[in-house]
Image 1 (cartoon, rainbow, N blue to C red):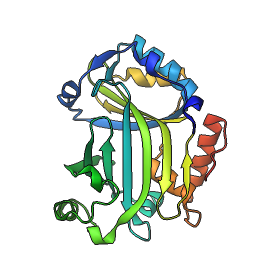
Image 2 (cartoon, helix red, strand yellow):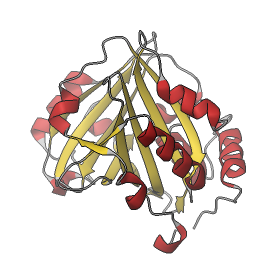
Image 3 (tube, rainbow, N blue to C red):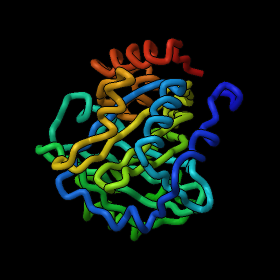
Length: 265
């Protein structure tokens, strides 16, 4: 999607006081509840205005308030991790490499979800050259085997996701939001590429014991929770032969929210 077709949020983010990564890392949400939402960019402008008025702060890293992320997801030839999610398996995993483009830091990351809905993430640094394939790195392969049900030989790079992220935190440090825009996907297996156009994926992480100001803001904008996985949406859109089931309905819902058709190249 062309840059000119996206709304710029630079001016809107100037209304927020900054927060540093060390300040945010010092706050642990021990009784954490995660919720996801999907809006379009126009709706996000109104949400950001209300969040700034409520005293939310924006994460500033490497001098910027918007960070670029580049991730590569790995899976088995049968797409077991995708299918586990599609089939609603309670305990499941995702394996990816992620480059935090602004800082140049790159990690191998393993996300594990247990049967209580809790997600834990383990990660180790890897050279940026291994973003597209870490499997030749003996230490990374050992790390994977020690923290997941998979070995490096079982996996291959399947999909690349590129997006921009805004991170907000409330004054009491009991809520964090990650706001992902300009989402682009490339499937290494099929060669197909697509974008979610002006769709925005928001994830709210909150302390379950505290009142949520952001949920009130979402309610005022008529935004309801929507479970959505970037990896699963990307596979659904770019793997023509995959049995995506309920994820096709999610694609239709996204198209309704952005009032646009998602196209695949």
